[in-house]
Every structure is written in structure tokens, then in C-alpha cells.
Image (cartoon, rainbow, N blue to C red):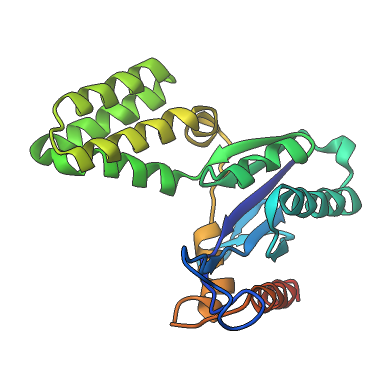
Length: 240
């Protein structure tokens, strides 16, 4: 009845695009291979570790709007081939709110976007870290607004934080956090208020294990073609 899709990207350093020396200032020296995986539940084994059920991975370098559409079309085609789509009630797309991830909820039938709790917490901490003794109270107020499903209340908490924030850099951090939380409100409601315990995103760990371990955790450099080929090899390996 329910399917889950997690999505994220790695940031891989480029030495060059097609041939050495072709990256000029301003530098465009990173590329982002995407990773998307589909599964139909999470099972906790005897060792207590959660395991994704019937997981299928997709990934590589997909550039621009057409590339993103191509990626999601591949995911949709897999779902149609592997599942009886008429029996599916809902598909959840989990991620950090990046536009390419949220677009999956448009390209995938019966899909809704769910904001990853880890990134939500990161932005809340970024907005409150400078408040010292009142930090925990501010965090609690934001979460209270979330659990009460009152967007206007959350906006009011951020405005109160802005009112007592003097430093310009901190003000910008609070504004970024405010825009992020309010801009992803629907995804937060599904994440925090949903009763489906399978809605939880493990994409950060998958990026680290599948991509970063081979492509970016050490000082390595790639060209665009090489980064795409290695990303796809890693996905191929993960699919057995």
C-alpha cells in the first residue's frame, strides 16, 4: 500500500570538465551525483539494526531540468514494473527539501514530499545556537508550533528570535532557517505528525557509504564523465 523513496546528493570535486585546465575563474569545481532509492518498508532484524525491504537504487550525474526529469522517469518506470500501481495508496519522497528532490513529488504518481527530520533539526539549531540560556526554550517553542500544526505560531517564534538578534550574520542564519522551515511546512507535517513509522530518511548514511567513501571523503579529483561513471558503478554494485 505504501512506498518510500529517499533522495540526496554528494558533492564531488572536479579537477576538470572534459580536459585538464578547462576550469577557469569563476571556478565551477564541484559536481553533484544524485542518489535515489525505492523501498517498501523497514524491518528491524535480530541485531536491532533497521533494514530496507526490497530496496532498488538509482543514481549518477543528472544535469539540468531535463536530467532531473530523466532520473524521476527511471524511478517511475521501475515502480510500474515492480509493483501493482493501482494498489498503491501513497508514495513518500523523503529528503532535505532541495528543489530536485521536491520535484519527485510531481514526477512520481501518488507521491508526497516529506522533510528529513535531521535537516529540519539542523536549521532549528542554526536559528537558536546564539541564544545561550534561552536556546532550549526557543527550540521547544518551535517544536510546540510544529506539533500543534500552527505555521503562524512557528513564524512568530522566528520573528521573536530575530527581534533579539543583533549580529548581522546571525540574523541571516535565522532568516534562512525561518524560510526553510516555513517553506517546507507541508513536508514537516507529514514527517512529524504522520503515523507511519516507516517514514524516516537514511539518505545521509547512504551517500556516505555509496558515494563519499569512494569519491569525496579523501582529496580526490574527477572529471564530469568519470564522476558520472563511478557513481553509476557504485549504484550498480549496491543493486547486486
